[in-house]
Structures are given as structure tokens and as C-alpha cells.
Length: 427
Image (cartoon, rainbow, N blue to C red):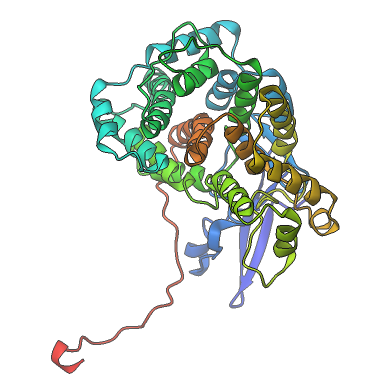
């Protein structure tokens, strides 16, 4: 294979280097194209543009492969804890028992959130969308932790990481409890990371908190499956904001805002809103399957197919099993979830969907699990952010330590050419 590509333009030949990754992905390096030929490339949405080199996550959408630092997502979801995976993503290797214990203890030591943050939460109306609240609170942490992170110091970097890993679940839980009118819960130092998340979200002051093993297992898997996903919209946002040398908390806040959109992290909320709409219409899933196949019908079947995966979403295979286990364990009787199971069954046996590989994706099943756990629909994307936190941190850390330049895309201008100012009386 050649290590260069030749572009011919205006009777000029320009040699451009070809780089190859460890999984044999090849890319043409066009960094020198503008200086060599006064050309830029255009790729709306960056669908075929590599914005960076990264050693964190490998994704092959055609083959349905997802790996974190070389480890298959299927094996990690089955065998690892969420904190193990977080450590792997951020620091590059699975932790030893001692490293994991220290990581968890340091996170717990940083899980107390300044009391003044509660004043900010109290200022939001109950109707405020939790993603807007979470983005604001994450950004506000900068005010309570004003010292900048020295990215050349591993100690400084580590302190910033355990600080946000400790405080973020508290903000998530507070955000949900605020919307439900429940008192704030600080968790317990005797519980592990995922158990504490469940306690802070669901415990009631007049009840003894007991961890349901099936719920914990499902949530652990969901957080792992959402932990990173290569250069998606929110991750790219975290990296490009951080490339200006914005701090970690500010960069994460920007990522949360990017995740909020219904085409990204908001997709799991959109799934449940669709299921509710089908229920209100009478619950005829066959009718809506026909609508989804009608090109002239604006109805979209949310939670099926994926922008990247051209086959079955590997995360969906894992979480489907967890969803079935949780629904059976909790004995949930919910007509909306019955509609979801009916849509799943019909789509997996309908030639139109099978031929186009429009299988249920991770957003479809995660929405089902969150609803069965009693998590409000508007909190679904917040749960996605909770899982994605270590991936965002890992990407920010890699970008800063790699001394990447500030992100500054080019454009092709299509506006008016030069013209003279006309006095307002003559317009």
C-alpha cells in the first residue's frame, strides 16, 4: 500500500501523506493542502473527516465492533465494573486492585458538593429540563474550583478527574430529586459507585435503602455501554472547546449541551415520547410500522437503526438482555413498555426493517430500562451524560496532553461579494 496519495489540480500534482492506524484504517493527511495548492476540503458534518488521532475507542460500524482501549465492549459489560472501565478509558489500562481501590476512595473523598450549589439548584423552577440544569451546575463547579489544571502535572490532572467523577453523580441525583420535590441525598461511603448513584436517586427518607442486584447490574452495563463512542458530536465538542485551553468543567458543560439534542443523547427520550404518542393514539403498533415505511409520512420510528452502525448495534445486543432481566425481576406492568416490546418483535421480523438493517439500537433499550426503574423521561439524557463522563474526560485529557492545536475549521464562503454601503434614506 502506498504511503502517499497524489492530487492533481490545475496541472499541478500534490503528494499528500497517507497515515494508517493500528486497526488498518487509512487516512489522507491534508494539513498541507492549502499551503500547497490554496485548496481546502469541504465535508459537511465531518462525516468523512478525521479530526484527531486517538488511542481511546475503536469503532467499526460495518462489522458492529466497539472496543475501549482494545477491549471488546461485550467482555467489559459482562465482567467489569463501571469504575474499572472509567479508569481504563482515562488512564489507558485496566486498574490493579490497589489502583481501583485508591481511585474509588479518592472519588468518594471528592463527592461532597459545596452547599452553595444547592442555592443554584433552588433557583431553577421544577419544570426546568434536567439537561439544562446539569449543564449549568457543571459549569458552575468552575466557580467553586477556580484554580486551573496544570495539564503537564499528572497529580493535578488526577485531582481534577477524581473531583468531577465524585461530584457529577451528586449533581445528576440532585437534578432528578429537585424535579420530584424530594430532599437531597448524599449517598453513603459504604456503597460502591453505582450503588451510590441508585441510592442518591431513589432513596426515600422514611425507607431503608436496599440495592436491587438486577437494577445495579443493568445500570452498570448501561453506564459502560455509554462510556465512550469515538468522535461523536458531544465528544468532538468537548475536544474542540478544550482545545482553546478551556478548563475541564467548562469543556464538559459544553459536551452536555451538545448531548442534549434529540439526534444525539436525546434519542432515548425521543423513543419514550414516541411510545407515549403511540399509546395515546390507541396503541396500534402495526399502524405505526406502516407509517414508518411510508416515505411520504413524516412519522419517524425512533430507536431503530444507527448513524454509524450499518449492522446491529453491538451495545443493543447486550442491553436487550439486561432489559429483559430487569422487566422480569421488577414485574413491571406498563402499557408503554408493552408497546415497545411489540414494536421490537415486529421490526425484527419485518423484511423492510431486516433488509435495511434497521434494528433496535441502544437508545431503544436504554429508554425501556430507565422507564422501568422509574426514572422520568426528561432524565434519560442526563443518565446518558453520567455514563459518557469518563469518555469525555479521557478525550479531553488525551487532547490536552497531546498538545493539539486549537480547533478552527475552514469554510467555503457563499455570500454576497463586495458591495457599497447605501444610505438608509435610499434603501
